[in-house]
Image (tube, each protein chain N blue to C red):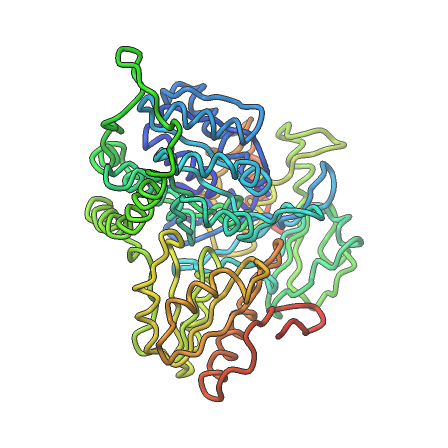
Length: 391
Length: 168
């Protein structure tokens, strides 16, 4: 059934379709309407779940770890400072292998105050052992929440997942969304039934002290299973496509990359604008393409390294991490190491600054020039008021 | 904002692509707000603001003095203003495609809001359906009935009356 809804509404519907059993939430802009929609569904009896209004995001995540331990499918959603407050417990959730799924309405972190969209909150949590899925549109938000549960709960993965929803740009935009049939979702997503769980009849202690002689083995298991998740994500995407007739290309969606001189690597909603502009430039004969990172954790190194036969690879970061260029840029450049591609970083769309078609066109034209003449500079901040922003 | 969402819903139910979004500001009750709707026959992939609209709808004629409602409007673009006056009396350049509807008095006839705070966002959509041949009025009425939080039929009837009275 086609409906006209926001991405936040789509995320809440996905939680309902996934038949989540425990949701623990704390409100924060621009996530709040996910929690509100879910609360409505529970209060109307459409979803049989325990809905817990917690006193903080830290507590919300802690509650879900406990609920997941007894075998419940768990859900929360957050953003920005809320995600940052969870930081410690995020690592706990992945360390004890709880397959929690959490949409994150991607937003700045203050100060000064700014409630609008960028990827800084999510990128700051790239090292906590969670899978990170980025979405381009409202439909993908709904579909990705379902896929995320399927991958997270796979016995060979058992890791939590964030579903990144660009703050306001998607969370508050109404768009057409095809709501899948519950019967098909049930077929795609069987009940969560972990082999090990807390049980009053069979008392056990989980997540206790690990001595130095085993800690590295635990960490290695997480690393290996995060790597293994790549294959599971691709399978989950294929299986989704078989059942629902929509697929997303696995870890990286490639658009017009095959014969491209210049490929822009981008994550999230800006990829849609990039594709639209790439098509316009193609009509002029410019050979440009878009590689959309759907999954940033685990990092799609193989897919990215295959871009290394193109002359020029640009990387659009919607955050800045004060390293040697932006975070996505650094990982993409690492994956391209040893290839002939020139790699350049574009920073834009921070703090709700609109990423316009004109910005994207400027980036593509700059990339083509770099492909022709060689790298002029490593990092370029796009759309600054005074036109500076390069080094 | 609701008007843009209703319009998007009507377009989507007609088989078109549409997206609707507010200007992402810090809104307070009563302060001017802007909302956008993008409609296309092809799937919409642009996730960016609208800077050069084809159509502008002004829900309160007082805004004409507070803001440039023609900003970025395409040369052959249209403007629809909620006003009891005729289009040429608005004080806007008369070489533009201007029209007015008295959505306020129509809304009040249908008991939508109060004289000091009329709810005109549904009534005006009837005017837009009449002025621009984008979305059939029946689709607009269905979307209103689906999305209006209260007095669904009154809201739909207000839009229908505006449509039937036509624009000036």
